[in-house]
Image (cartoon, rainbow, N blue to C red; front, side, top):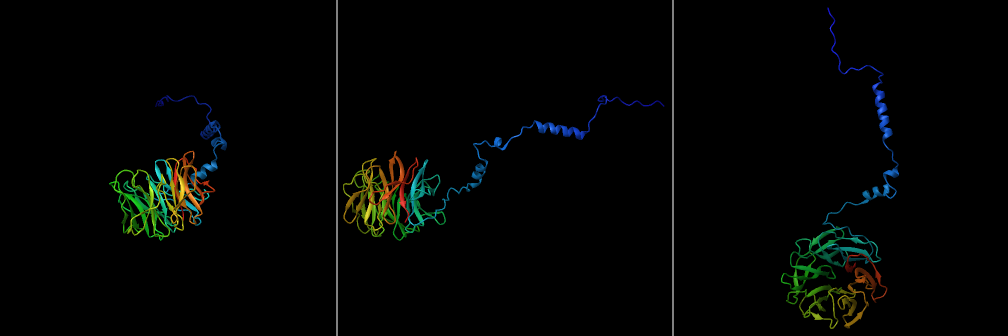
Length: 352
């Protein structure tokens, strides 16, 4: 029998030196390892960047609160803090700061306007005006212990300039209706028993009543109202029961603004007055009807007494026309600056 020929292997080559497969793999890995460049820690993280600080910043940031939840209220001593309106970008917010300029904190941070803050007598809450619901301004409470916001009025017009009665049970405020008439109202802190205190002048145009403040004695409410000339206001006093007509307190003091505040004993009223761009702080002795000037230049507004009446907080444009919060003694001495932000800080109110 003739032996069968095996088919030719077209891929066959002459056998040569063959290395074990495992050795080949080790050689290839060695080549790859040698060809990869090595780096020191400084090359991964340049000297200008701290590895430690980068990690700590990322882990130290607290979770962002929901837009409707204000930051918790800081703890501190009685009368040690000042709350104010802080304009940042396109919106007004509420901020707070210690009387020595430390501890600045923003309390609200929504895409709405919050302003006109007023402390409750016990200091546990503030009333303020906001357009956070339907665009018109209503009054709200910010309760510090729970960081909650509670509505006080509901679509009655545009409510602003709230102030508490001495016992904290009622709030007086100004409200501008859809026809342009501004009047004074009182409402319980529960939002019930809304009543008209004084019906303002019946004309459209600039707001006729621009501010209200309840005397700490409880028997009088002061407010600023225009009766004839546009943007010229006088201070009036009215009884909270509304049974008698308002009594005019000021005469001839030009350029009065709407920001007023009572001294703790209920005898003096703080106000701001003067020509446009050159307002100063004044005090009125409501018993003697004597007016005293406390500041001289700086374009100052929104004065507020400290709980004991020995200091006054106010906003001023004296720093290159930048609205900042200042404090001074009740006689106008020892002025000092608390805030320094390119955007406006205004409407300070001292904690009780």
